[in-house]
Length: 366
Image 1 (cartoon, one colour):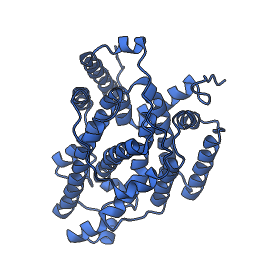
Image 2 (cartoon, one colour):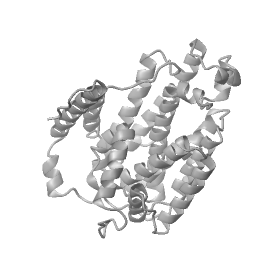
Image 3 (cartoon, helix red, strand yellow):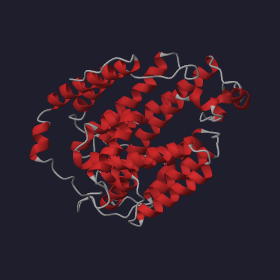
């Protein structure tokens, strides 16, 4: 039986727990970053990410991608009409949509990006790849801005730039990390003109994906483009509500580290997959909390032209401050130093659990 509340009329505590379990098992980096978001943001963000994750999986692992897309659009129509399907992620996302006035154009654009995936679309140049990235990643950043109660066009434009820069840079990094896996599935997300400039014929390479110095130069170029976007994102993160900055810095640092790991391995994303150890993630989370205390500089004035269609869907409603943390939450997180110690301890226990599961040992997480 569903037990909802006036603040969350569609979802129950069990729904949110199910969404968090989904992300903990399949989106560990977001799960780690979400641990340092305030509860008022963490819960709707969890519903948002869980829906996006389920949608992504439906396209990637479904036998009929066209049918999966049609079903996802029907699910989106249902939850935007206030009648979400009997699925935990749909109910949780319906609450996020209702409570934070998320324009339907945002998740619709996300599904359009998935449609491009289903068609195995290729991208000739960086601008075309940006258009794809805006849909599958920038939309999520824009929806996160709404969840953080950033609603005026001017502020959402900055937050959307931040979201696109951070999430698209994340996607850049994931492209580099997953080159080998994508090629073996018949997909390619590297800019084709970059490949040709490196004397790589895309179709021939796709037929036999191998790593060499030519591909190394393309992946290095891609990671440098990502790094430029990360630096641009830093200025935007500093303008977010103070309670949200640690979580966003955490996501930025955790995903950037994947790219750094790719570089450490000589840019070979064909034969191996870069993995960031939990202990290093814990150190990065500690750095995120400290970085969140720094003052904000000036925001860059330029915008990604490929994201303008998202901004056009926003109804300017000003800016609503986030609810203050309750006394109970403040007691749980009294100081930045205490958050760092708690997270480092948590990740040490998670690492022990993973190691024990791999080797079939009894797990002690106390």
